[in-house]
Image 1: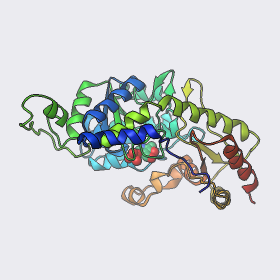
Image 2: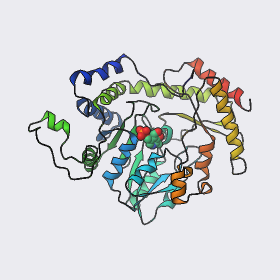
Image 3: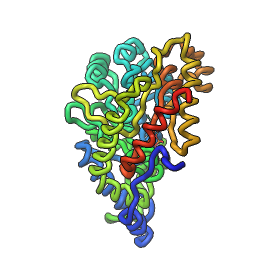
Image 4: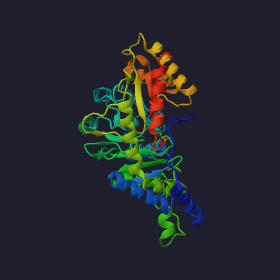
Length: 389
Ligand SMILES: Cc1ncc(COP(=O)(O)O)c(C=O)c1O
């Protein structure tokens, strides 16, 4: 691809960073992971940050730490990456899906409230593509019904609501450092929380359930003794090579996010005359993190009568760009139409119309800090030509 969907920001600092653990010989969850956690906590203003191997494993640890038992229900958006729901299944729980808003792609708080039953223990809203979900009514609902709230903030680095960073509203937040995200450690994830008990539980669970971390064993006295293993844990330890990469990425996070936001505003201007494309919205009080610039293909109002036809036209636009060397992607997918969930729970797409329309009609364009103005203009020109072209 001449213009890829994204490109990680790696330079000499990252190249040097990954050499350091190789030189020291400490390559798994050690001092660099600790330093990455500290920088992440400082940036988000979370009290604690706990690294994991991905956002999926971070979410798994977080829901175990806040309490999820077999048979429990958790409310999950119908339009999100599949792992938001998978972590509930890993614990023997049941994800109960609710529809999203087609403008913001985030959960509709009224649909979340409707999905709560006597078996619900928690809410798992997603801050999709870098825009915080409507968090106040969700926090209010969680308080009234005594539910925990874990934020899937996989895409939400740099996302703020009323000046407060994503991942610091609920009981815990979980971030991703997959290469499609604003900063990357290859694979990688981070939990943020203000709760000391969640911090302690997540730290133990990511390391087989130990009561004593390798860091404290190797840096403290009596390192020859193992701790006790009270819980059924996992090996979700981030490597120190990734930790060092994360530290280097955090050193330039402000620049990365500012450039993404600047390029997003440029798209807003350049695409203002493209009426068949709805650009990302930023409601009052929000700061968008722009993990992705996801539009909705909307030459007509979508409905059941025309969505399949519109879907074909959107795919035609995407194929045109692909043949011009420009990558595009659907935003994410409707989990409710993935076979595992559709068959297990007998789900019907008709019950989640906006999630289905978002699945069929969303369109993400390339966005990364190193893009040039000329490349952005090329994306926009090709988009204009591609409609039914
Ligand atoms: C909303 C959402 N949740 C969870 C994940 C999972 O993140 P990871 O790939 O780090 O496991 C992603 C990844 O794209 C995501 O977009």
